[in-house]
Image: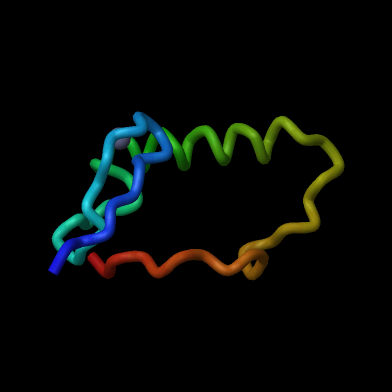
Length: 65
Ligand SMILES: [Zn+2]
């Protein structure tokens, strides 16, 4: 059975989309943090656009620590 592959949004590396890939679709925790950081930075840079709260858009399932 072939695991589907996705590209890491941060570095474009191919990542197998399997339970072993803890940080999928990112290749690593580092890339995930980089992406989150960029996302938060973007949020903050948009003045007057605060309609999205903690219960905003659905998030993909996150692996439980
Ligand atoms: Zn990456």
